[in-house]
Length: 455
Image (cartoon, rainbow, N blue to C red):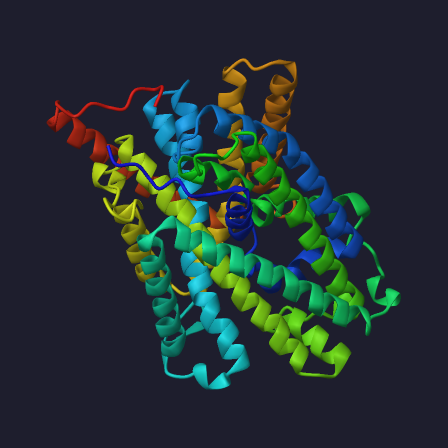
């Protein structure tokens, strides 16, 4: 059987996971984060959320080492639960990775259109009151085609792009944060909380699964480790991603809050963070720098999420949870070519939905990430590890349950609106239809053998 290429090293795992974690959301929703918690509430919310993820990160490190399967959570739960649970777990995990691709493709048009207003022309239609412009669509399609081709060619090309964009992006963030520090004021940080301290922290903590998810994607590339890669480095990559992600959000939250009064961030503006820096520095170059860094982050996130989603789709196909054609490996490039093309084509189709329809679906990503983490913790707990491992898995189950309930329970502030419920329902129904269709195909083809629970 042709296998995937074995090329990835520790730095590749870190940059790919960080790419899944950090895209353009920090620029788009920073005003919302500060309105939720205020500067200190936001920092404490992210800190508490990230620290609570450490035991979950530990669980993933142990699972990836024990079960180096690109199916990730779907493979972990398959050891102890029925195939339908494995499918459901992989299906919800796939949503979080895949939907980032069209979201970033559309963000490319928004960001470049902010810098070059001539791109905000030739309106095709409106969805949810938001215009969809032809140049934005074309730019998103070109980016999708380019990254699909790159991922089709080989994991080395994808990893090389990931390293370049990640370290370039982090360097640019440091530059604009230092530039803002020279023109800000401590007075801009007040009030430190948007509501009561506890409520402020809770409101920010709710979105941490969406904004800090990505560390678990290390498992999706587990089969592509270089021959000399030490299995303990899976845990190192996971923990490094969590801590660097937390440090990144500390820097950005602090920089934006310091440079201008955070209550004055106008959510009606397209990119209030860039506007705040421009007003503080009285210069347009800082806007170009911030938007340029966002474009780098966009490519970073698009590429990394395409790698993660295609590997998950590939592994689910190989397990007969989806069409087995998704499990095809290119004989020369050693990439999951069919899955890569499928993700690229689905991204092309989804781009035409516009951001108005994608945002509610992305909000569901906070819950799908938590559900996937919960499934991983449950599987690890069933593996009967030593006391430390069992404690980490039990804590992970408790934390992820709280994360899910915080978004689903109606009387909790920041819960799902009807739009998110509709998005979740549509994705669930699509998954049920695909699963039913696959089971019918398997019944008609008795010679097809299901992959056993041990993988």
